[in-house]
Image (cartoon, rainbow, N blue to C red; front, side, top):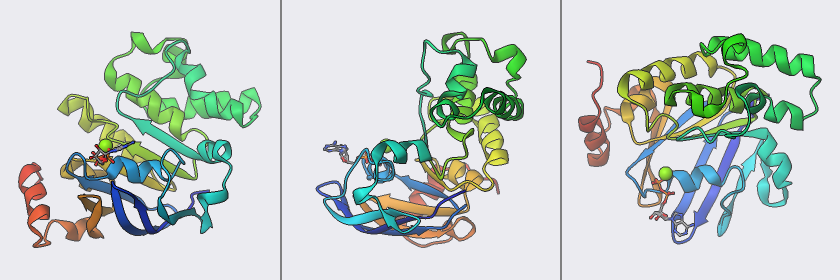
Length: 239
Ligand SMILES: Nc1ncnc2c1ncn2[C@@H]1O[C@H](COP(=O)(O)OP(=O)(O)O)[C@@H](O)[C@H]1O
Ligand SMILES: [Mg+2]
């Protein structure tokens, strides 16, 4: 089941200041902003890799302060640039990581991996026994998506997952990702506004550790804020 996420007056001094956000269960939100704006730190608050110096982060309105970190990381998927796959595990073993931690029976894991990898154009019969180093960057990133999504995380955290890919592969992965995202709560960090608009329905703009804009994707580009217009000018948006 997808979860909601709450940031209540969260600061991580000296990086983040007074972040207030409510993300609904099943909503996909992009965190956009220049490098150093505080996007990654905000994301890491949700899986406990960063801690507030004041305020609180909650999942389904349950504050994380007291949460079991191991449980928390099993409930949150994390997709990063460069895929972060385990190099000594095959594609199948990588994808099966969380189901095994959760104690799924093998046939259930296998069936779920088969279905998900097929949707990502990586048939298990051809790719299951391969090792990450024998895959292209785009294929590795697809395996990373499958690994993060197979157990339907309560929240999926994505930190510039397609940042290192060439534009055509990147576009394919954006489409594949969008086809899988329904019913998942997604926090997606990117500095690419075109990508944010393609993948999510809401854009949150960070600057200097603060949220400076927060709007439905369809309305974002028409805001007069100079930084918004800078991002619009930098993105090659479809007319
Ligand atoms: N662990 C840390 N200790 C101190 N400063 C940090 C730490 N992590 C990030 N920063 C700084 O906080 C700011 C925001 O970083 P980050 O959240 O990574 O931004 P973004 O992802 O938007 O590029 C940057 O100036 C960065 O150098
Ligand atoms: Mg970052």
